[in-house]
Length: 113
Image (cartoon, rainbow, N blue to C red):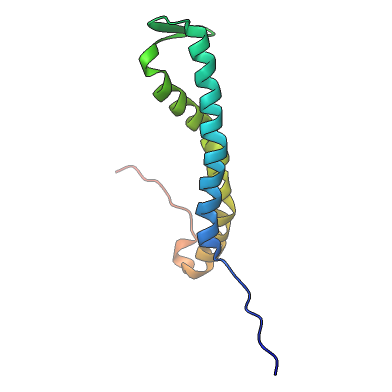
């Protein structure tokens, strides 16, 4: 008598958020810690850090370094993390166009009233 082999299958909808979280955990905290240590080294114990980026400048209190670093790194890496969702957006568009009906296929015309 042969026994059936059970295969483990994971849902794509479960794996995608896990992949996004893993990528976020690899990219954001590691870069934030490196950036934070560099800024702390630049501060030399000063109360404020002055950063100049071209014609724009920023004066940042030393006690607010960590929130600033996390926000700036997260904003920079958000494009990479959200690009993981692009295949789902393309599939969604391909599925909803035929199922939406032909009355949704025409372009919207803007009129002034």
